[in-house]
Amino acid sequence: MSEDVLDELFDVIEDRKENLPEGSYTTSLFTHEKGENEVLEKLGEETTELILAAKDDDFDEIAYESADIVYHLLVLLAMKDMDLEDLRAELAERR
Ligand SMILES: N=c1c2ncn([C@@H]3O[C@H](COP(=O)(O)OP(=O)(O)OP(=O)(O)O)[C@@H](O)[C@H]3O)c2ncn1[C@@H]1O[C@H](COP(=O)(O)O)[C@@H](O)[C@H]1O
Image 1: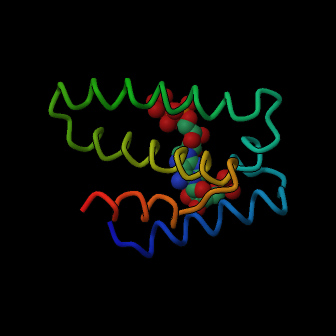
Image 2: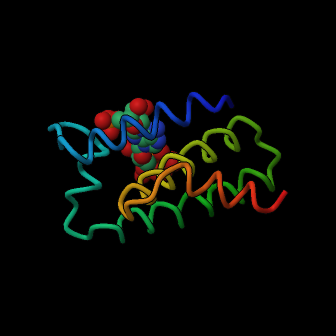
């Protein structure tokens, strides 16, 4: 996955957070009555699905669930007023 895809996706998520366009799933997460708990539940569910896919060596499903997890992780970072640079800085420190 290229860095640009993540940057572009995060920019779209930030736009949804600011403008809250109707009909957007991302908007629904920012306006959900359960707030960030909805995102945390999704991350839990998708991680379980990823584990099952990995156990089955279902490579398409592994990629699909991984993308779901990354998307919801980026939404969580945006909810916490964090961004990709926080993630990159943490990863870079581990090199
Ligand atoms: N990358 C994503 C993305 N990944 C996952 N999802 C949504 O996350 C939800 C996941 O919920 P569920 O796990 O219940 O659903 P599921 O994946 O359909 O089903 P299972 O995994 O349970 O089988 C689905 O509604 C997906 O559509 C996403 N919704 C939006 N984006 C991107 O976010 C941007 C903004 O999109 P809008 O939210 O439509 O404005 C766009 O660039 C989109 O590509």
